[in-house]
Amino acid sequence: MSPPDANGKADLRDYLAVERTSLAWIRTGLALMGFGFVVARFGLFLEALQISQARIVTGSHRFSLGAGTALIGAGVAVNLYSAWRHSRLVEELNRGEVARPSSRQAVMVALFLVLVGLAMAVYLVLIRS
Image (tube, rainbow, N blue to C red; front, top):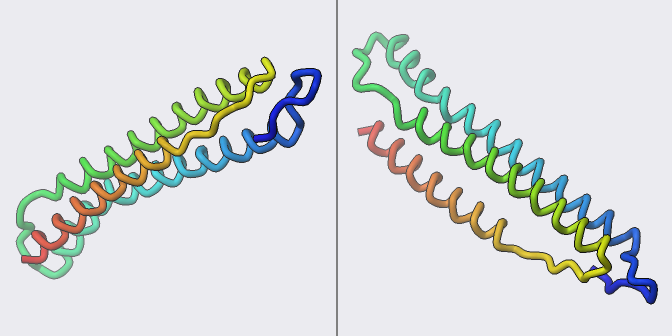
């Protein structure tokens, strides 16, 4: 972000940069929610696959429902946080303060996705055996 001009006003480019960042986080939240829905329904797909192969359905696939729900919850949390962060950055720009970008949100989402991805990989390996 560029520093405010002599009048203490932020440049239009700063507002547009904050807007682009906010929209990128909203897309990330929506993608998490969509992927969560697919993961939650994956258990139903596995059950239908076992039934179509005339195999006895072994155990329930509740893990996919839990993992999908966690991803949907993460998407909601990302969208809520991005809305709060966007309004805070705009307020800082309006006051003429230099808005400091933070990558903490990106790191937290990435670590969460690593954990969910590892859990899903372990789940799929365990289902296979």
